Length: 110
Image (cartoon, rainbow, N blue to C red; front, side, top):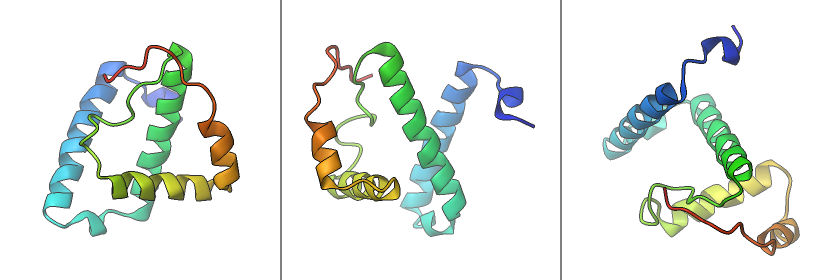
């Protein structure tokens, strides 16, 4: 079954996101995050990054990629950013080029 055949609605994704966030936070609090498979984490990260980029570009704005600036520690953010950069075979020079691009006006912290 293709992903489009399973499509329900934006509200379904909202509900899944809320439930998933709560379940992941609970697993981390119980130190059970190690029992979540690599495949599951990779699928979640891939989907989140794709959705974030497409929404930002489609709406011509930079939205805050986390629920609040305090939602992640600096270590968590840098670790994820570095591994994302490595996973697509980029380097610090590539990052510098992208980082120097102007941001969209109208950044929101939705």
